[in-house]
Every structure is written in C-alpha cells, then in structure tokens.
Image (cartoon, rainbow, N blue to C red):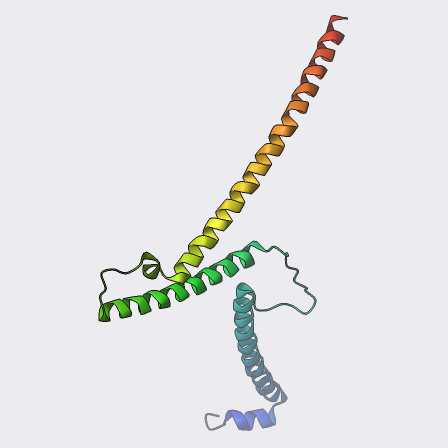
Length: 162
C-alpha cells in the first residue's frame, strides 16, 4: 500500500476527492482572508488619517473651524517669514559687497518686516479697542444691576419685618 499515491486514492475513494476539494477551497479562502486583512489594515490607516469616509457618512465642518483657522494663520505666517527672509538675504548680500557708514535707518529695516510689524500692531490695537468697548459696556450695565439688587434686597427685608 506504500506505493499508492494520494492522487490514485483520490480518484478511487470519494472522501479523498472531497478532501482535496476542501483543501483547495481552504487555500483559496486563506488567500482571500489575507487580502481582506491587508485591505482592512489600509482602511484603518486611512480612517485614522481621516482620508476614508464610508459611503453613507457626510462630514460637516464648522465655518470657523479652529484647526482650519490655526493652519491658515500658520501658513500665512510661514509665507510672511519666507518673504522677509528673502529680503534680508538680499540686504546681507548687498551690504557684504559694499559697506556704507551713512545708511538711512529705513534702508536697514526691510519693507516686508515693517509691514508684518505694522499688521501685528494694528491687530493688537483692534484687540485693545474691543476689550475697552467690552469693559465700558460692563460698567454701563453694572449700576442698574446694583440698583435692582439693592431695591430687591429692601423689599425682601421689608417683607421679613411684616
């Protein structure tokens, strides 16, 4: 019986033929399982990065999304810094070639840097104006509130005496 091959047995015995078919199906299912596991791994990565959305999902975004505002501000700052850097490099290149003692101060500060500082100053001044306006409104609201409070306190005290 040692000379019998599994092929010959599978042809003669139906259970062996069924076993061979089951092994083939098992190997096909294993390959499909590996493929699906890899796809699942990729989808988990995409979901983690926010790159994949299921078909029945809609993403809503706030108009004033804080993350978007922060990234926009950061991008704007990087652009301004690059512009300033280019101007400063040109200034250093010019000053290394020719050194002048009596240079004007306005020539020493690049225009891009001056613009950035002026924009920051304007933003800070606007913030100060907003805070002062808010403080003034609070001060205007406080006296009527104090009057209401003292009047209601007098009424409560009068009710307790009766």
